[in-house]
Image (cartoon, rainbow, N blue to C red; front, top):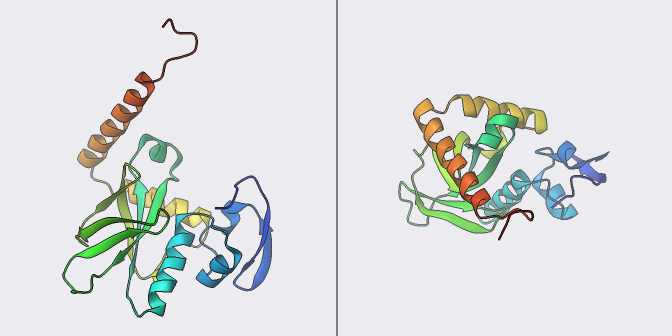
Length: 183
């Protein structure tokens, strides 16, 4: 994973560019990512994973979601990219894989779902389709995709998930004891 504080010189579609991690977000192709061994995030892992699946003739779908959380609403820049793969028995369900963590998220995922779960969070789906049609090609476009996705979440679901998020945060903070607190 690339260090956000470090500057890198890497090829982007065959042209050397120098910049920080965010500059390379959703810009390089799978071969450039794999050859460098450096990832700017989940989108890079997704790109390389899909490229590997194609080599074996396996179809796959990019699933990009905006995190439903207080942080995501505040910054409009928190999401995750995963891959849906049809199982060998070709059912109407898919296998949902997180290439970043190397884990199967769901072995019986319904492609009609509007969200998915990863890292203890819910992600509302903003794009599901072919990687060649993926709409975000830089950090600004990715933030716009997340922003548009957050605006599409039904208010009842948004309120419910935000309440869960706040409860988690409060629960975590109640388990930590400040150094100055009496014991």
